[in-house]
Image 1: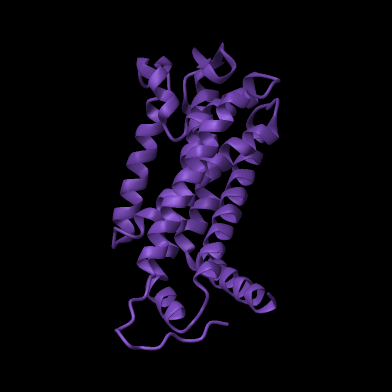
Image 2 (image 1 turned 180 degrees about the horizontal axis):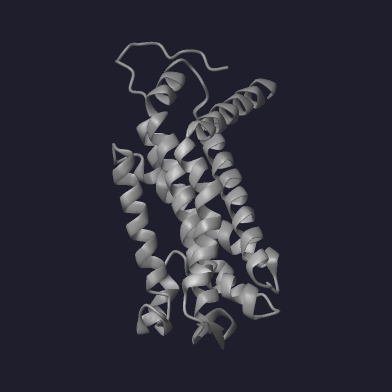
Length: 262
C-alpha cells in the first residue's frame, strides 16, 4: 500500500510539473482571463435579454453584458483546462509508456491524470469566479464556482481524449475551441433563437450554464441541472482515461517476461 501511495504521489508530482512548464497556458490563466472578463463585460450591450433556466422552470431577464460574461467565463475556463490537459497528456505519452514498460503501475498514472484534472479545473474556476464577483454582485458565488469547475472538468476530459488521436498543439486547441464555442453559442439568446430549444439540454455545458445564470439571477439551486453536468463530466473523464490507457498500453513480445511491479 505504501509503495502504491509513493507511486501515486510521484506521478502527481510529475504531472503537475508538466503543467507548470506549460507557460502559454499559465500566461493565459493569469493575464487573459481578467482581460477577457473585463472587456466582455464592458463592451457588451446592456440591453435586457430573457434566459430560460429550464432546470428551475423559470425565465429571468438579465443584462446582455452579464450574460455574455458568464458564457465567456465558462468558455475560457473550459478552453484553458481542455488545452492544458491535452498538451500535458500528448507531450508525456512516450514517457508514460516507458514508465509502464518499466513496471510503474498504470493505475497510478491514471489516478494522477484525474487528480491533475480536478486541481486545474478548481484553480481556474475559483480564479474566474473571483474576477466575476469583483465586476458585479453575485448571489451565489459558490454555485458559480461549481458551474465553472463543472464546465472545466467536462472539457478537460475531452482534452485528454483528443490527445490520443491528435498530434499537434494547434489541432487540439482549434478542436477544443470549436466544440466549446458551438456548445455555448447555441445556449446564448443573443447568438441564436434556438437557445430556448429543448435540445440544449443535451449539450455538454448545459448544466454549467444553467448553474452560472442561476448563481447570479436566483437565490436557489436548480438541482435538475446537476445530473446532466455530472454525466457529461464522468463520461468525458472516462473517455479520456480510456484513450490515455490505450495510448500508454505496452505490447510485449511473446515470451518476454513482465517487469515486476512495485
